[in-house]
Length: 72
Image 1 (spheres, rainbow, N blue to C red):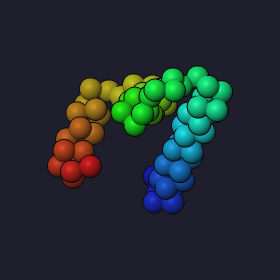
Image 2: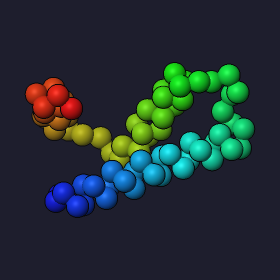
Image 3: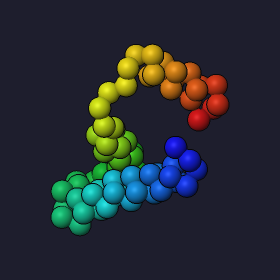
Image 4: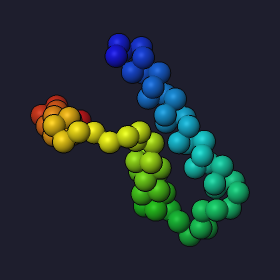
């Protein structure tokens, strides 16, 4: 995947997840007493839901190694 395609994917994904969460806030689905801690957790879970399919063990291991080595 080339850089422009990667950038577009990240923009679309973050926009989509953000809009869904904002809609939930507007619709009063998010508890009033939640602050950054709960919202960050919910945001992380929403991103996790966006993962399509599952990675093979070898691909996941390679991904985790790359994240660690490149300090991502």
